[in-house]
Length: 149
Ligand code: DQA
Image (cartoon, rainbow, N blue to C red):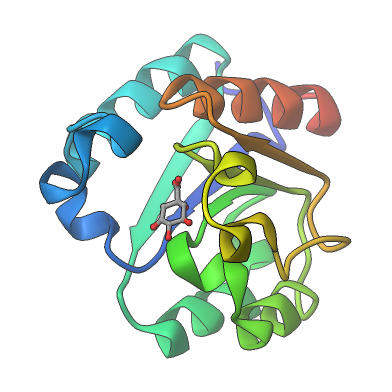
């Protein structure tokens, strides 16, 4: 039996469609499908229902966030480079908020200075970075606890 309050939108932003082509030292050399497969496995163990979305369009990303509570109870967001400058996505996070955890595969706190900035500060409940794919497992656990799922 599935639990109520267990739908998690897993949102990937710009350049995640080509994740397997990006620097393997930073991003693990896996594809988005492989990443989603791993997340799906953990979600199933926690009786969470992941809903995956990726776009390279900032407008589409904002549009999804405008209605996120219609389809999800919580969210994991890795907006890629948008994280560091898109005030539009930050504003969109406040439109129809659900408990949200920000995840980054790489250790953004120990890369270029501009990556240390997240315009989502104050809009997300937690930020996990530098743990690779395992960061998503941690984010799912946080949301499961938060949602009582
Ligand atoms: C990233 C970190 C960002 O700085 C970068 O622009 C990405 C990926 C990460 O998951 O480590 O595209 O969000």
